[in-house]
Length: 432
Image 1: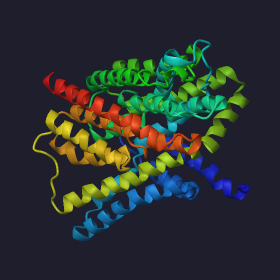
Image 2 (image 1 turned 45 degrees about the vertical axis):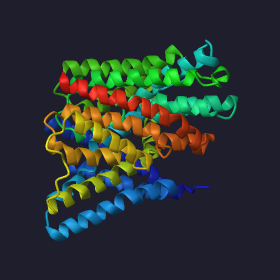
Image 3 (image 1 turned 135 degrees about the horizontal axis):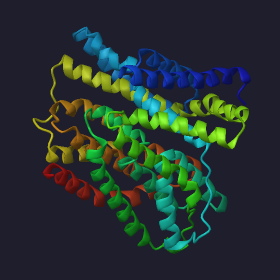
C-alpha cells in the first residue's frame, strides 16, 4: 500500500503540470511562442513520476531516450551547438498541453448504454460507431470505459477486442482531440486542418467500412455482445468536436492545439459550475489536477523520451551533414514513408517517436506540408491498429485478457486492405 508521504509528490506533480498548461496557453496567446518555464515544469513532472511508471513503460522510455542522449552527446562532441538542446527545453509542451487538457473531459463524461440491440451485427455496428465517436474526444478512456462495461458481462472476446481497437485507432485520422493531430501539426508546420482533413476523414470512412465488412463476415459475429453508447452520452463529445471545427473555421489563425486545449478546460469548468455548487465544482476540478493529471504520466513520459530521440536524430544529421530526405516529398515518397512507418510500428516503435523523427527528416524536402500531415496521420492510425505492442492493444491484453495473437491475426488483413486505399488518397491529394 502506498504511503501518504509517497503520494504527496505525485499529487504535487499534478499541480505542476497544470501550471505548465497555463504557462503554455498564456505564452501562446500573448506571444505566439512556447514557454521555457512550462518546459521546466514538464520536466519536473516527468522526474517526479518516473518511479510510478510500470516496468513496461520504463523499458520503453529507456529504449527511446537512451539512443537520443547518445546521439546528442556525440553530436555536441563533434560540434558544440547549443541550438540542438532547445527542443529539450521546449519539452513537446504543445502536445503535452493538449494531452493534459483533454484529460479534464473525463470529469464530466458519463457513459450509458443505448436500450437497443446489443448482440450480433446490429450490436457490433452500433458499438463500433458509438465507441469511435466517443473515443474521438476522450481518447483511450472511451475504449477502457466500454471494455469495463463489457467485462461485467463476461471476459472480453477477440472480436470485442478488435472492435474496440479499430474504433479507437481510426480516430487518429481526423480527431483534433487526438495526440496524433498535435504531433502532426508540430511535425508538419504550415499544414492546414481545413486542407488535409477532408482526405484523412475520407480515409477514416474507408477504414470503418473495411472494419464493418471484415468483422461482419466472421463466423462468431452472431454471438457478438456489444455496448452501444447512448445518444445522450455522445452529445458532449459531438458538440465539442463541432465547436472546435466551427471555431477553427471562424478563427483560422488560432492554433488548433490551443483551441482544443482551452475549450476543453473551459467547457469542463462551465459544466461543473452548472451541475454543482461552486465549492463542489472546485473540489472535483482540483481532484482531477491532483489525481487525474498524474495518471497521464505514461503518455507524457513517452512524449518526453521521443523528444530526446528526435532532438538527437536531428543533431546527428546536422553534425555529420546527413541528408535522408528525398529530393521532393511527393505522393510516391509519401506512400513509401507510410509503408516504412507502419512497418516500424510492427516492431514496437511508437507512432509518436517515428512521426516526430519523420517530420524532422522530411519537412526540409516538403513543399506541401499537408501531404506530410496526411501521411503522418495515416501512419499513426494504422500503426496503432497493426502493432500488438501499441498502447491501446497492451491495455486490452494486460487488463482484459485479449490475446495479442488474436488481435494481430485480425488486424494484419485490415492493414493490408487499407494501405492501397491510403496510397490512392495520397495520389488523389497530390493531383488535386
